Image (cartoon, rainbow, N blue to C red; front, side):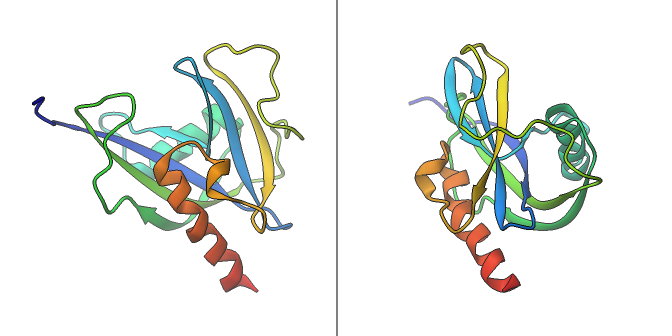
Length: 154
């Protein structure tokens, strides 16, 4: 039996527009299609908020404001791509500083070829958001948390 050791920490931003839509990121990474929320891996020496701000600039090309912490994984989840490591995912509600400057697509995976690193963004109505719209288990769990945000706003 292989011993489990170490952690992979991922930090994600939940961006909701005025139409009660959430931003999804469709990506081709590690030779697979994936739909997730914008964000990425925590680097050594970096705090979670700094990580998310860096990821927003890298992925969206613009700065964000961190509104509040929404959720941190509270159960054991093995990392999909690193089988001996535990995955911790941290989610924050974010707002853009300024109007969106990144391209918004009308369809999933709006890029010409399946090349590692390709990414497109689209809005998805929270009312119609389903767990199966997302690829990874913890993102799927976030669907109900995101839906509760909209209920609380109304």
